[in-house]
Length: 77
Figure 1 (tube, one colour):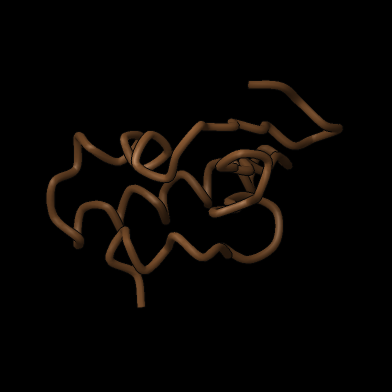
Figure 2 (cartoon, one colour; figure 1 turned 30 degrees about the horizontal axis):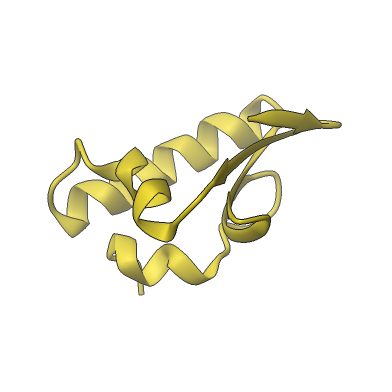
């Protein structure tokens, strides 16, 4: 974990490791809800969260729009 300006960066060795962040929320509806809540909270604080796998962004939450290739794995369309 490290910071870049107003961005919190979490870098994981594998996508499976990164997706463990959402493990407590077992179904896609709850994962979508928590992702939206995190996005809104970070956005309100003027921060963003960049979840990376081996240095490549897979999910970005916070300032701007929610984006990333891994969103479909969390149950978001």
